[in-house]
Image (cartoon, rainbow, N blue to C red; front, side, top):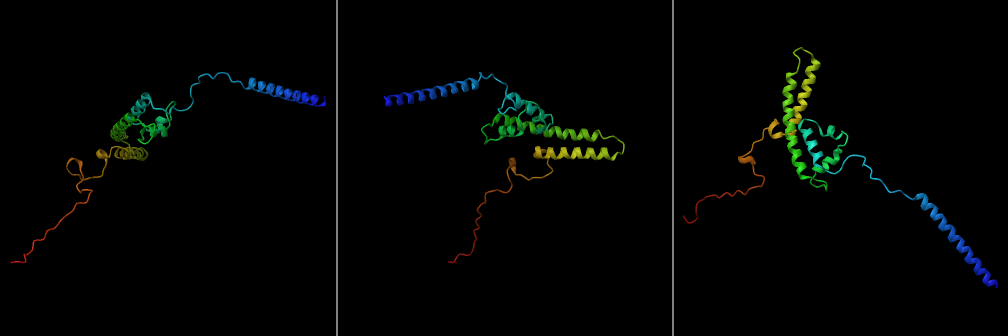
Length: 187
């Protein structure tokens, strides 16, 4: 009898502890139960390429704006994201955007060269050294940018090339053989 009472007591304690544990778990599940998440508009900058964003960036570059000023606008990607689209080794690389970007940079060089003429024409005829030095700085900056964006057209460097743009001096060493003509021994 004593044995059976101890077993019953053991099962009663075990049952109560399981009961309390399940009640605690139910309460925590009710409190932690999450409501279905609503679709929230993503915050932050876009990271995937779209034609709309790519065309906008190229159009603004063609107007003479910098990539930095374009990427500071609301809804535009960050500068590293744009460079990932341009990088051939990146997973986000876009060949169409790369070609458009190169063309936009060439047009930007043309725009900068045109602005040099406008800056020099806008200098007032009065001898104000501040305006003259500001205009000189602006035109020098635009000359430098144009020369580096489109060097084959705006660079001061003279490069000699052969036919069809090939190098005059071959990059692969060529073998030169000298044959000396001498007297023959039998004569």
